[in-house]
Length: 299
Image 1 (cartoon, rainbow, N blue to C red):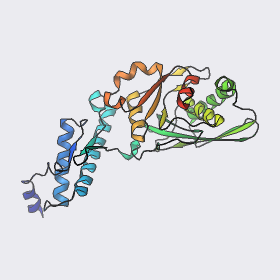
Image 2: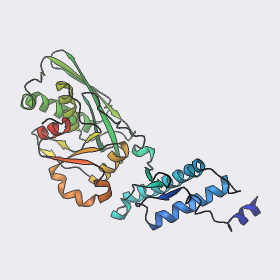
Image 3: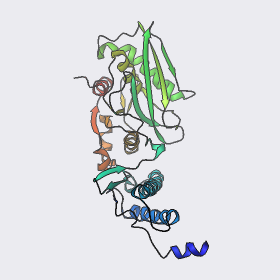
Image 4: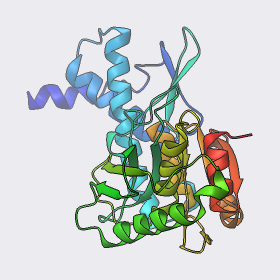
C-alpha cells in the first residue's frame, strides 16, 4: 500500500474538476493552490482509477473549498484585510451558476429563511461568550394582560439581560412615538432569544429586542431576510457596530439580504471587502425609531 501511495504522487489530479467547474473569483492564488492540492489528494484516494461522476467530484470540491475557508476564518482573527475575502464559491460550467460554499458554524444552513417572517421575529448578529460572533433570533408574542414582559433563553448572560431591560423601558416610554396604535399597558409581551449558532450570547442586543417588541405590537413583520446591527442606550443613543466586516460576514452566511447599520458605523465601511458589501441592501439609521421604521419597511 505504501508503494502504491508513493507511485500515485507521480500522477497529479489538481485539474480533476476543470471539466465541470471553475473556482470563484474570491479565491486568490494561495487559496487556489490549496484547494487544488486537496482535490488532487482526495480524488486519488477515493477514485484511484480516475473514474468519477460530476456529482462525486463536486462533493470533493465542496469539501476542499470548505477546508480552505476554515483556514481563512482562523487567519481573520489574526488580522489583515487580505483574509476577509472568504466568499468562496465555484461555478458550474454547464449552467454558469455560482455556488457559494459556507461553513456550518458561520450559519451556512441559511438560518434566516427566505420570504416574509412572522411579526415579532427578528435576527441580529452579536458577540458570543466564546469570542466569536453569532446569529441570534428574537421570537416575540403578545397576549391580553397588564404590561408585563417575560423573557426566556438568556440564561446567565448579564449584559444581555440588562440590554433587553433597556429595550423594554424604551419601548414602554416611546411606543406612542412610533405608532399610536401600540398598546403597552393592556398587553403582556413574551420573548424568547435563540442562540442560533451556539456561541453563547452575552452582548448588547437592545435595538434588536426593541424592534421585535414593535414588530409584535404592530403585527407587522420585518422586511424579508433582514438582519439588524447595532445597539442603543436607555436614552436612545445609538452605539456603533464592533467588527463590522465580521458581523456582515456572519449575516451573509446566515442568509441575510437586507441590513440596517447605524450611521456611526459608516466610517467603518472601508474595512469591509467590496464583494461582501455588495451582497446586501443596506440602510443606515440615526435613532431607534428610524431603525424600526426601516426594518419594518414603514413608508
